[in-house]
Amino acid sequence: MDSRPLDVLREVYGYDAFRGDQAAIVDHVVAGGDAIVLMPTGGGKSVTYQVPALVRGGTGLVVSPLIALMHDQVQALRANGVRAAYLNSTLSAPERAEVERAYVAGELDLIYIAPERLSNPAVTGLLQRGRLSVIAIDEAHCVSQWGHDFRPDYLALGDLVERFPGVPRMALTATATRATHREITDRLRMPAARHFVASFDRPNIQYRIEPKADARRQLVAFLRQQPSGSSGIVYALSRKSVEQTAEYLRAQGFDALPYHAGLEAGMRADHQQRFLREDGIVMVATIAFGMGIDKPDVRFVAHIDLPKSVEGYYQETGRAGRDGEPAVAWMAYGLSDVVQQRRLIDGGEGDLAHRRRQHAHLDAMLALCETVSCRRQNLLEYFGEASGACGNCDTCLTPPETWDGLVASQKLLSTIVRLKRERNQAYGAGQLIDILRGAQTDRIRQLGHDTLATYGIGADLSDQDWRSVIRQLLARGILVAQGEYGTLALGEPAGEVLRGEAAVPLRKDVIGRTGGSSRTRR
Ligand code: ADP
Ligand code: ZN
Image (cartoon, rainbow, N blue to C red; front, side):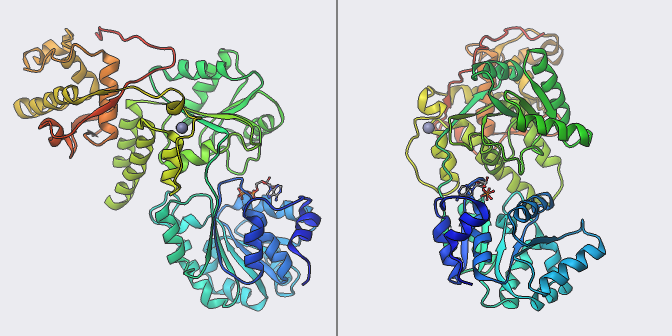
């Protein structure tokens, strides 16, 4: 085949030029080299394996776990005159037979296959009867047992090197920490691959994270700051919260629509269409919304619940500002998020190792929330990228004040210790704060907590201040939340704090407009 990559790009896709690393990747693969491609969502990964497949002749094999995406890509390719097809569980037997025939006859430029099919000898046998030009493994981070998307079927993909020697292989992902990157290289057996690592920075996105006091009011205040006609997504954790928030926003005059997997299919499609076509729609959604949605002018992404991992946060916020124009990623997060997420992990499925990984993912997310330095720097560092302070995040724009939280932390920790030691009791944040602040509630009197030595020793701080302290100590593992009620206990580093051997610098919370704390909590 003598068609040159740039000609193919222009003729088939109608693009003028390659972007970023695309040309280098395509040249390398066309020449027969293996490649590991780390590129953020929207970076243009598809072209990097589709063009080599078209230039090299034969059929390009694309391994993809997302059936809906597979379908969309094949449709788009066919519309551009590319001979593409897929093999997955949605095909009928005759349809599958026709795809197989076309492949063996050399009539396909690209064939998309779900990873689980490749552990079937009949499928690999079939592939050996045709001629592969390139093997592209999309969403390659699914091979990582550390990651949040692990798929066992990916582990077998390393064997493809033996079945198809001499066929260049590519592993592509938009999610890669250093550890995942290493796992991809090892497990897919690509030691000689060239690595193409694009920057994960999205300079036009402004990152803002604020402590949660009254999430809905804070959200409304944030939305009112956005230019009118701005489209955006509000992510919430549960379907119920999605519906209630959408309703609340409508009542406040916003053009808000709910979106989650429990909605009737017709309504879901309708809401998605309106979001894509109209201006000024606020889509309130669970994370089910957004995959494969190509809307370049999403002006903001707001989170009213804490994402489970930095990868998730990055992917979700990355749906903003794909057109390169300024966009905002805003989030409100609080003590209850930390308690809830820890509880979900501990009460969830999987073995101890799995839960540990989930806690580690959450820890990284919390570190991003609590950082007193640049958010972007923290985010990029997570993906193994060094950078300076960005000047376009909340901590850069208004550097947070810190205060010495050692004494306050000791007061809190020793209250927990005394309750445990003297009375064998454990409580959640509310009761502990009442004890510290010397509140005169019925519960305090009934439980005799007003006779504790630490009763009232924390009256210098407000209820809100104490919540901030507890949240930050939870984020650092100095406190741990336990059981159904989120009772608080000491974490490993608590000993050092109690002995005064560790400094506890804390962030001074600045909350949108909702200040003020109620003294009485009867
Ligand atoms: P990814 O798979 O990395 O998320 P895609 O391959 O879906 O990204 O590409 C993202 C968007 O960028 C698509 O809308 C695609 O049409 C566009 N795109 C990709 N490469 C180019 C290019 N060289 N010139 C113009 N647009 C491009
Ligand atoms: Zn910054």
